[in-house]
Length: 130
Image (cartoon, rainbow, N blue to C red; front, side, top):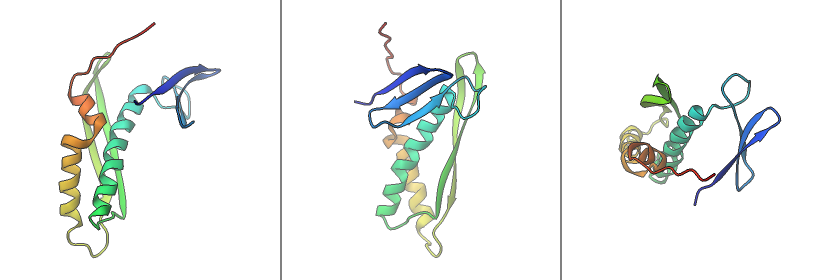
């Protein structure tokens, strides 16, 4: 089970996981905080990259740089448009197969193996308990 606790602090909110990691959450006006939408985008990008990285490395193709920018426009109040993930990659020097491996692995991860991406594509029931 995945679980995160979100709680109000003296100057905003924070999300804390069971391992003690935390991130400041806010409305975007304060410095050093993520908005909830930014956290969603970070979750998607993080999910893809932390899945792609070990799979390409296991195949002997560790990218010199592996990063991604994740963007979405708000198209209406409480509604995002298409989310775009743009990879920023530096291939390993002298590795002629790395690009093909990266494209194949990243494609499979995007379509089938990223839990966050799957949750965004497929409707999920979200329950609220007060």
